[in-house]
Image (cartoon, rainbow, N blue to C red):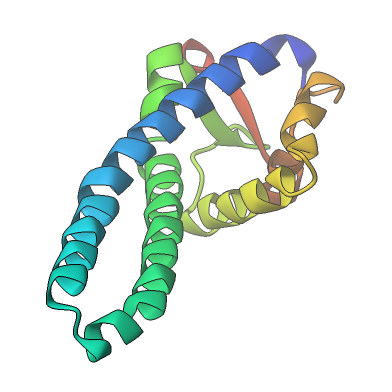
Length: 151
């Protein structure tokens, strides 16, 4: 892996910010709005069974959010090599040997996002000091981010 082929942390961060904004909008319409309707009906009718189901519904909302993020990043990286944010910024994710990611590698990379984000996003920030500009999730899945025109 060479340094000159890897975009900087700012471009990668901007692409991630775009992706997270799109995911937040999707979560609002697909998860939060229906949950709001459910909660409003529960409060209006005040049925014990409905109110008792609220904690379970909250868990389902969280699970739905995790599944949405997993599907978005895994499918976009496996099918197109880039998310919408990366596409807008002209970035692409490739395997260490510069080939398209397999679905398994894409899923492993998404799993690595969780690992990279837990310690105050240190795994994402690592790309700024890594000689190949790879974040922890890149190292885990043996991927790298390159400029789209280089692929």
